[in-house]
Image (cartoon, rainbow, N blue to C red; front, side, top):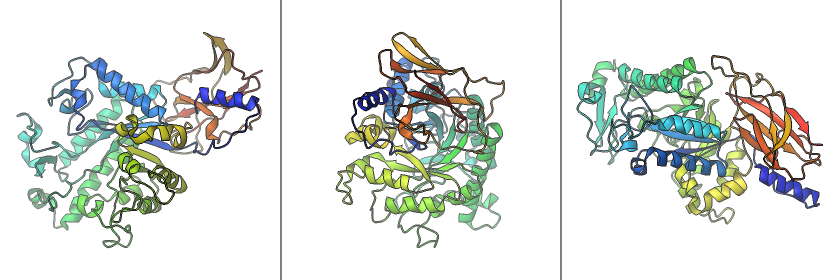
Length: 501
């Protein structure tokens, strides 16, 4: 809840007005949104200045809707939406693969800066295996797939890295290591494309050569799953050896297996991660190779073949220790009436269900452009109700470890504002997980109990060492302000407070 609303509440309290309905939203919740670049041709028509303004505008609208994390696509098709010496500039950014932007700028670096400036997390989203998105795309003559065609497979008119090759796993991990080492990302995120999706009623069958070379008599389905397992395990090791605090997340297709295939599966009847994409995501969670799962539950609550209300419960029950954030389809959610509560959409039920399930820690909105366009009022609903209070993303790592508390907390007046300031946390030369990267600011009115678990009392999450808390003439006498520090694992320091006389 921002400062303006809190001060309005303060005025109402002084006037004796009763308040209700606030504080129902959790203090800790992952509220993400996917922003894809693939298929978004508007990027190609923007100057650097226009693109920067567009990124800033998108991130601001997401923050206004209560989101605290952006999952931004930086590698759609073995290319780069950032400066890379490993892979070419993305055609989705510049119009031609390998063509640099007309001006010298780095979209991912700018996007990270804009996210962090708003106190939001930035998760770099990569597609690991896809090289082309359609049959019409022509790769340059010097492309790796032309030099070493044996390392690639083709299906449904697209080109993919063959998951069987160690050289391909090493290249993908080299790309991720480059991103993690050079950019201040909070997470590495991969989507649901592993082995190619079935197409035209046929499953992928394009790896005879690599199976003969590497299969060693294994069942082919098990062998394919093993190939993907090797990549996930190596990605985890790559990320954690470089920066242990960077989270590794996967957004799988919403069905692991149907119960008809496996007694552990869900009561569904659809495509399966395990059998059709050769992705055993539950194994990855069980082995600690991933930090979070964002299953794409893009169906309506009661879709016959895949009811999202039951799948949300299934992922809650089967995540094997990984955090779960539900991938929600904005358009379908807002287009579908919920007969259970007579709403014109399913938003209320889906959000409340995600908060009811103990192992579900939030939601990710697909796609973020529907949120920023306020599709059928979704941004308004999020901002005014479901994400009306500021939330801190879930904590990671050893919860007993805390960053150092703030020092030098004080109130000062200037430029017609009252500012709450504190000393910036000292930084050592080498980055570490206990580095303070954000601060949480709480405001308590004279009639309120100091309760840091009350989400409505948070007025800011900021990387800065100060925030304006009121206009100079506002009535905030008797209010108490509390500031805590957050480290890279979202662990919160002990509080430091100051009371307005």
